[in-house]
Amino acid sequence: MSNQFSFFDSVNVYFDRAAEHTGLPPGLLQQIKVCNAVFQINFPVKIKGEVKVIEAYRVQHSHHRTPTKGGIRYSNHVSQDEVMALAALMTYKCAIVDVPYGGAKGGVKISPWEYTEDELEKITRRYTTELIKRNLIGPAIDVPAPDYGTGPREMAWIYDTYRTFKGDELDAAGCVTGKPVNQQGIRGRTEATGRGVFYGIREACSFAEDMEKIGLTPGAAGKTMIIQGMGNVGSYTGMISQDEGQIKIIGIGEAEGAIYHPDGIDVHALLAYRKANGTIIGYPALKTFEKKDRELILEQPCDILVPAALESVITVDNVDNIKAKIIAEAANGPISAPAQEKLLAKGTIIIPDVYLNAGGVTVSYFEWLKNLSHMRFGRMEKRFNQNQLTQVIHLVEELTGRNVNEREFALIARGADEIDLVRSGLEETMINAYREIREVMVNNPAIPDLRTAAFVNAINKISSDYNSLGIFP
Ligand code: NAD
Image (cartoon, rainbow, N blue to C red):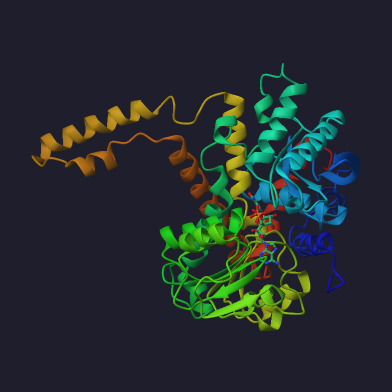
């Protein structure tokens, strides 16, 4: 690491800075800040005839609300410090978007690309078994979800393993979220984090006075964007920003290299190209950066920079070269604490991870609720609403003498499906949370930035939970 701050240190620097604005007693702040439980597990898996010992973690940062919740990361960079930092971020994130969980995170120290699907299944099932054995997973205990290097496939293996051991648990499906839809998942979960990132960016761009300060016009449409990482979060952020926000994507970075084109890169075409060729290199662009120079994509001019790969990609080493006016932290912890100071000093708006990528956990919460209720959202009311709206249309037609055409009818007299309700719930959550954070900042001139405001908001909400327990008078 190129600076003296570990990832967990960075999170705690942000926490301490925000804590000063809360006036809460030190003991309570300390209880909110520390990781309540840290588990390291080492287990053997036979891979290609040889035993490999896998290092893995599960950290439950805060039990102020249960279950705890947080993704599982498969990466060679996994360490206890990283998992603790990510678990802490989950606690604050859940509080910010009013999702009633304590934060947690899991990590398995492997490079998933080095293993076959069968080997990954073996590792995932064994990791899950280790969690079950220690009572570290369950719909009322701790509920994992996808993160870097994992997705619906891994979540389905986790659910199946859990069900094998706990088949008599009525709510077993709520033991993990981010499952495929046909495995008790929810429509809209896969896109949720990226969609939430878009809603957050759009909301931030909607405040004329904030945009004016950085020399931009209000509104997301027409702004330029560079995205680092075209995995789950980055690809959906790109597609939705382009399709629904009319944002121009001008740069894309991936593990194999990066491309930049100021005229715009069609994200769908680029993703199709990468699928066909296994790389983004070769896609028509003004500038192409080979693997060794891939981080230079962060330094190209643009309005909005979206790091959506890994943490600590903007540090004191490259921060002076960053030209973006807005940095939208889709990834967790992409900016080190010292680099943030420099960015804020030059007026860059940083939309913090702890708020911006909360779309995933928000829709995971909807999935968990669906699992506990054993019913798809919209099933009870869709047809009823459709009938009511049809009646209203007929009444309006009668009163006005104008007939509604087929297209209008289909648009208006429509009961909401699960995907409509999930997107609407997510949009509402992201807009409300942004406004809450911004209000904390605007109402308190001593709070200098959105991240500090987001942490203040989170700490205050968590402290009120502890206060209601009567432990901290
Ligand atoms: P992912 O594994 O789907 O995608 C990550 C992508 O980054 C991959 O395509 C990988 O090839 C690429 N990448 C790796 N190194 C790179 C580099 N040096 N330069 C450019 N690209 C590189 O992971 P994800 O789920 O999209 O997660 C990305 C980030 O978002 C992580 O920080 C994660 O913690 C965060 N996040 C994810 C979710 C979620 O729901 N998946 C939710 C909240 C936060």
